[in-house]
Length: 471
Image (spheres, helix red, strand yellow):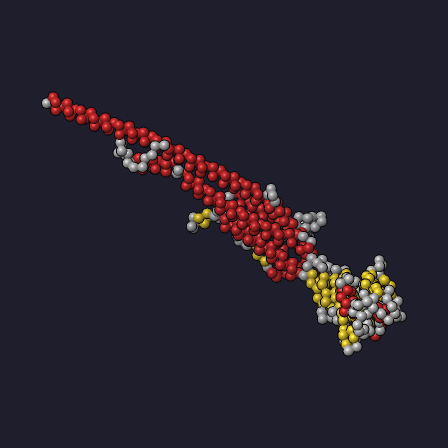
């Protein structure tokens, strides 16, 4: 390609400047295209923010349209030092008295003092239940069904400490420790679980009398044992038991725990389960805040300020305006679920100028005294499921779906970017082609002008010479 980097030699024209200005004119559409791209980029970012705000609103609506969002309860104990309690969501309000009469116990035993090796043989540990007599020579033991026993092989050289180590490694349902005193060592055993069904027995086989059989249950001093026992309590005077100190679902939905026994006499503790309206009110507050965040953002983005003559990013954008109107209509909808409360304003949630919601705390608290009807207003009912929160949840879920409003809008904006990029490349290519053509043309022109100038100089010289010769 011919190159021109200075004033044309032949023509005397500033060809570089001429070409540059013509190319700039060809590139003029780029300024508008780049501004359009910047606007589309800003809209993509803004719709991403709006999508996030709508997602938050959808989550808030979900809590008010689901069953669990209305299941909050508060559980109290008149004296949690003796009886603590919890309740699962949805538990019906209730009150009951608990009197703990016994705490759950694990079986524990202590062998007689033994020094040196114990003696060889097999020590069988079985889990089960002792009769009223308890562990010892006179007690009757009934093993678990199916049988749950472990055999411990004891060698002639094993000490009490060695046997304890083998028991702890056998996963037999008991733990073993050693107590050492002046007379020797004692094997202390304790069941891992509490409750009368988690007692244990020890039987020794294969050894000589006076050897391993010294650790058997029949050789244990009853005074050095504690029988496994269930926890016991009275609920409104009715006796109940549990293998642990925790009583689960003795009262439907409620778990209470026997913490301790009174030092003397009896102790009656009242457990109460009530609706937790504070959690429900917090969910309503979150719903209002989430809606206001979306509405405020869209209001700012779609407004026109007559004073500053500035427009929001989506001023005149039908999709943004339509989104705001759709959400507002859903929140303003009339619920058919409740016969008492029809709209948000009925429970103290009203619209302000600008479209945001405001809460009248006093009116809302009063409405929550009839919480079931408030729930129906938000959730709807079986015969009329179109509650306000349910409507908002359904709408926002559709908007956020893989083929919903936001995906469709993003696809449209991405296509605009693609089209814009193609247009910019087209302008750049056209400008490059123009520059190439102009450089070629002006280079050729300059060359021709140079030749003509040389010819003119030659002719002028010849004429001058001819004039002199004829003068």
